[in-house]
Length: 79
Image (cartoon, rainbow, N blue to C red; front, side):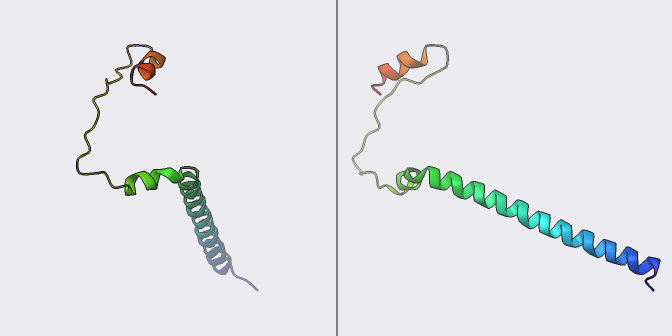
């Protein structure tokens, strides 16, 4: 016959197992979401890895301050 103490110990063991499985599942979901972001933006890493010529000069572009029409700003910077 199983004692109350044995039953409580088994319940605690099962709770620990369930918590571990749930944590593993949550961690996997986070990794999958991160992989999806990386896969959906393949150009991002290529941009970080790109070499910029030593003589490259950054063009002066007006800063968008949010006070004007965004469409007009985009036209002004030539996009």
